[in-house]
View (cartoon, rainbow, N blue to C red):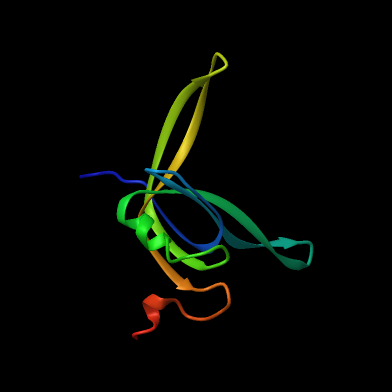
Length: 112
């Protein structure tokens, strides 16, 4: 049996950093938490890496758009300043725009 580590995020795009081969995307997902007797929204920022055709889908999205991203989690380590540092990478396998920042449905939903 294969063991896997997956993620699923529904959130809003905050920042897009594209290079020639890879794109890093910051996505804010909101979680509710209790603060005394009140509930507050607590945004968590996630950095997701996109390759290949997913980068083409992302080209139609913009900051503030609501997106759904699925993928796999990968741990890595590297040496910096004589210390071993550890990182968790979120590599996207699926990407869909759910709604544009202006509240309108995405182009993907227009035909439905």
